[in-house]
Length: 74
Image (cartoon, rainbow, N blue to C red; front, side, top):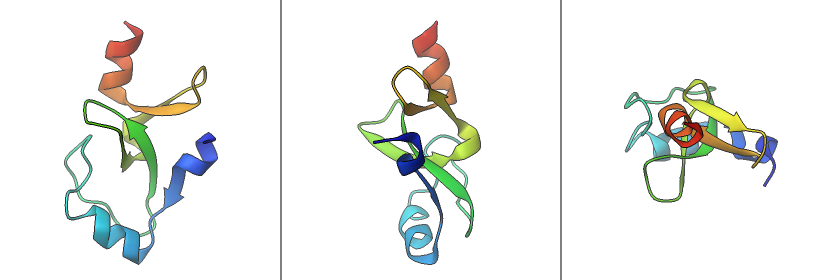
């Protein structure tokens, strides 16, 4: 999956689905029209998080939650 395929602009249906939990990276709710990315983090698998809470690892072409990426890269 390319980085552009991991990124979406929230539409109403997706917003309603994601806001049940909110952003696992910052614990805030999402808003309509916001850009979110599928990211790895301290959770199982990947989850959508706010784009500004993510870092794109160019080596793996995957997004990581900022703190997780920092811990990973030492």
